[in-house]
Image 1 (spheres, rainbow, N blue to C red):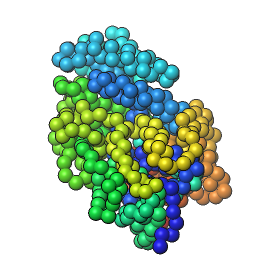
Image 2: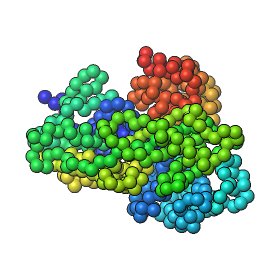
Image 3: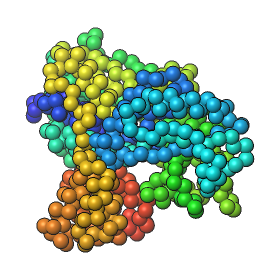
Image 4: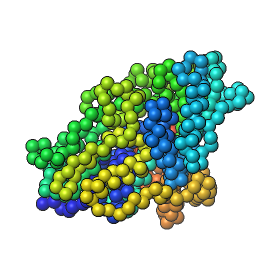
Length: 506
């Protein structure tokens, strides 16, 4: 017999699953979230790390999506200031590009208009003196350099923030919890889970499928021949589009602004200073991917394409950037709803919700969506469930600080400066923009037990690893080094191995 019952089971712990869990728990619903690997294991840790309006969507006349994205970007800057910060972009225009300076300037003016109230600086054009000061941008055939603002975002920690906030509000949230079977019942479903070597069952009135690339796999768990006419999600026209990125060392002198680069067609590529200006992140691609979804891989062709775009825009002393310079690459699969004949870059990122009823319960599958609009998407999901008969409290998340997000950046820097001297200033500064107001939890643990300030490897005190394991559900070195932090890029092989060994033992 099932051990318990809930209002909603959410399958998938990416940004949308975590956001739905947070919103639903805050409305008084009984919620369980199941993520079979780690939170943000796939697409939600493989993005361009931006909270942005989607400037290029204006060209496709998706004004509603851009306006919503810009509104949500403004909200994230206030509710998650430790994870989302303003970023200035430069947009160089050359005479060989399809889009003219006038066309791009008009688009930026519309972008400004749609972001009114967002408290970001307006767009404009650099003076010749400012252009001359740019350290690496090529000058041949350069017509103008425009500028505008968007925001950098830590995608994996935004996902974790929503999941931990959901837990704090009463949701049963766990990673390494796999759904193994779904069986319909009179008014909902019974789900089987595998977790920590144990199995369990639970009844749910509603299922929300936010499994990203695996959304079809979860839908297919329902035995079709056991269902009434409306008991399973309807077929979807799903497209998998791979977005790949490469990371290069920061050139000398360093770039301080991000760049929006155009290739000879319609593609937009970003070059973004990353991790306190130590690296450049270059991406992304729009590559169709067929076959069964899995961990996406940046192909050799995509690496060459990104390097070619970068080298066309920037001149380095000596040799151009080469594949041997790439220190990291990744790829994520966007799961989109679109026609097989549609070009990948033209497929809308608008969210699509597919629903089915099962008695007084039901099933909802989510396709599409953006990192930036995850809060609004969660509201849309809950509104749909409410229309299907699920009683709940009103929407509440707009303007409410995310987990760790109650302090602005200036206050966080002060917290970092005033922290325990047994922790290096560099580590305290990193903690401020990783944990936000939860930095006080780490400080409090050190105050109780000063031995926790001992560094396991340089820059990583033991308290941080224990916090990651006990509070943030990290159970592997990869969880900590890539999704809880980005130390995978800044620690050497010995240090990474020691951290992996710590998690293996603990």
